[in-house]
Each structure stands twice: as C-alpha cells, then as structure tokens.
Length: 581
View 1: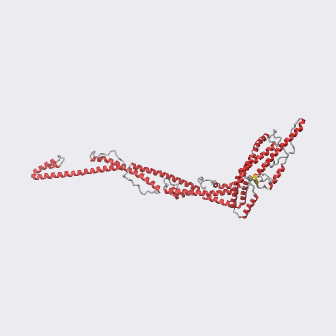
View 2 (view 1 turned 90 degrees about the horizontal axis):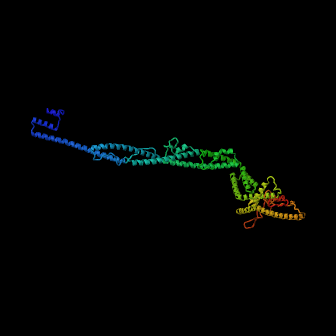
View 3 (view 1 turned 45 degrees about the vertical axis):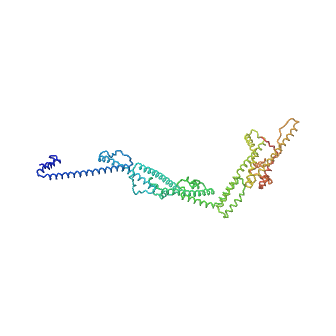
C-alpha cells in the first residue's frame, strides 16, 4: 500500500524524506540488519552525489559555452563595427550588466542589424567598384567584364566608400570629356568627308565599329586607341584637304588665266564658278560638301588641259593681246617703242616653231611686269608733267583772253571767263616752281638709271629747256612791245597836243606775235603734248650734276618738221599783251 502511494504521485507528494521513510518501513518489515541498512544508505548518498556532480559539470559546461558565445558575439560586434567604420554604436551592453543570457539576448539584435548594414554596404561597394571597373575597361578598350570586382570586407567604412565614389566621379567626368572629344572628332571627320566627297560611315567604321551613327552615344568607344586613331584620321583628312585645295587652286588659277587670255564668255565661266570661288580661300573656309571631291578636281584639270590645247591653236591671238597690253602700258607711261617690229618678231617666233608657246607667253608676262615697274617709277614725274602742260594750256588761254577787247562786255558767260582768268593767273604763277621741281626730279631719275627720261620719244629735259628759252624770249618780246607802245603813245600825244584833244589809241596793225610751241600747237611758249624741238636745241640745255652740259638724244625728224610748221603757222601781228584783264 505504501509502495503504491510512493509510485503514484497523484496520491501524495513524493519526496526524498518520504521515500527514505518507506525504505525504513520496508527494512523493518523485512528485518534488514543495521549493517545492511548503513551500507545501502551510503550507496544512496554516493549515487546522489554522483548525480549532483554530473549536473554541476553540465551546468559548468553550458556556462562556458554561453561565455564563449558571448565572447564571440562581442568579437563579431567589434569586427563589424570596425569594418563599417563605426567607432561607437548605441545599445551595446556592458560586460558586467546582467546575466550571460541577458547579455547575449541584448547583443543578438545588434549583430543582426550590423550584418544587415554590412550586406547593404557590400552591395554599395560592389556597385561602385563595378562602375569603376566598367569605365576603366572602356578607357582601356576592354569593355568585356570577366568577373565581378572583389570587395575588401575588412574596410567597408563610409570614408572608403566616398573615396570610391570620388574615383567614380572623376572617371565619369573623364568619360564625358572623352565622349565629347570623340563626338567632336566624329563631327570633324563627317565634315571633312563631306567636303572631300568620301564615305563617312566606312571611314569611321575603320577606326571603330561603335562610331557609326546607328549606335547610341553612350556605347561609342572612348578608349585611348580610338581617340588616337580618330586624331590621326582627322590629321590625314586635313592634310588631304590641304593638298586637294592647293591642287584645285592651282588649276583654278590656270583656268582663270586661260579664260582671260582667250576672252572666254561668262556663260562658259559659270560652269566652273563653284571651283573658282575657292581660288583665294583658306583651308578652314572651304566647307561646301563635295567642293574638293576628286572627280571635281579631275574635271577641272581636264578643262585646263582642253583650254591649254586650245590656247596653242590661238597662240597668235593671245600673244598679240599681250603685246597690246604691253603697248598700252608704254603708251600710258609715254614711252615710245617700235610696235611694228615687236609684232613682226612675235609672228616670226610663232611661225618658226622654235619657241614653246608657254615660254613665249611667260617672256611676254615678264616684259609686262617690267613695263609696269618702269611706268611706276615714272609716275611721279609724269604727274608733274601733266600739271605743267595743263598750266601751260591755261597760260595760253589767259593770253588769248587778255588780248580780247570785248572780255569785259556783259555777254553770256563773261563772268565765268573772269573767274577762270583769276584761277589761271594763280596757276601760271606756279609754273616756274613746277618746272624747277620737274627738272630736279628728272635729273635725279636719270642719274639713278643712267638713261635719258623721254616723253613720247623726246627728252623731257630738252622740252623743259626749250620751254624756259621760249618763255624768256616771250618775256623779252613783251617788254619790247611795252616800250614800243609807250613810244607810240608819246608820239601821238605830242602830235595831238596843238588840237587839245587826246583820242583813244587805235590798235596797232601789223604787229607780230611771239612764236613758241603751245599746248594746242600754238604760240606763247606753251608746250605741245608731243613737243617738237629744233635739232640744235635737243639735248643742248640739259646740265649734269657737275655743271657740264649733257648731250641728249636728238628728236626724230618728223618732230623737227612739225616744230617748224607750228612756228611758221602762228606768226601774227605784234599785239600788245596786257598784264591784267
């Protein structure tokens, strides 16, 4: 009954004391000896001690495991904080605060939070390093990524992440600059290909396939090799453009020269207007598509060759045209040449075939250039000769005006003649100084070149000497006429004194006019445009620098005859020339 109660916990509470009591009752009932009883009690005590020892060992082992787990957790926490660059973290428990399990329970959520933060940080590092690796590959020309970048999990701090972001920003900036440079190169290549008439797509595809227009902007190659090849392509195209332009300009210059030689009509010239418009353009100014295409240059060269062949057949016409230009230059410079002999020589050279047409034309161009230089050296003197002759013409007109008895009548235009007379007197007074200047410049010109300065074949100094002589003779004639008139007036006064009246003196009849060349071939000493000199006067009055007389070339015979005829045809009465109107 007692055993049943001990085995059934529901009947009564079973404890060590109740079980020992039941064991005593059983022993008493059985009649166990005290020795057996003591032995069995000792055995029970030993078994209980062993159970406690095992429990204590298990508890100690569990505590050690918990302490190790707590230490590992704290070490892991420290490692995560170090990797994430966190010096301090809110919520980390102290080592002596709470039991071991409480400390473990407090660290667990922190570790979970830090692990999650670490995973996010690793993802950020992976993304930024992947972008850096991609851009570096694009710059290096290797856009195929073999593997993901390795992330150093020992340093996941924000500082390190900022360094990667800064590196990425610099690379993105460099990529943008490179892309902009690539697009500039591509645009330049496009423009150059358009001007040169080349295929743009094939040209840039040879550099890199990604440079075609069909590809996106971001997918274009920005590698060092692509930039280098683009730069070399641009340089090659620019050099080709420069050479083509030089070639085209040479052909265009030849084309224009041939047109001018053969008087090509404007309708035919307009066919090559797109070529000649670039004759003086610089390389950068030529931007019209196709303006330097090879077929255009070849077409221009073919036209030049055609005109050059046509020029050979029209050689005489072209040569005579250049000769006419040369004669015109000499005529404007008042240089006398033998035109007939020159034209006969040109005919002989062309008919003989001993000279190349180009050489003949080049020689004539050289003569034209020298003639222009000669005319330029004479321009200053010729301008003063024109002023001198114009002043002499005014002087002749003024003397005719002064001899007019009706110059003060109220006739139509009288006031205009009066104004002209006033201006003419001012101009006439400047003639001596103008002649002196002209003589000095002419002598200086002759000393520099060692030849005589001729005006339409007549030495200019001889013309000036003759003018000075005739002017002096005219002044002496005027003085003689004034003295004669005073004497005649005195005789009239003495004869009419007894009658007490003084009639106005009649104009003397039969007086002679001063002989001298005029601008219109008249008298009064004014030079004609082709002044004729007597043979004994030509060159007799030119004085050299040391004061000696310099013999000048004698004027042609026809000029001498003209001078004699002019002098004979203008002999008239000895009219009195008044000094003022």
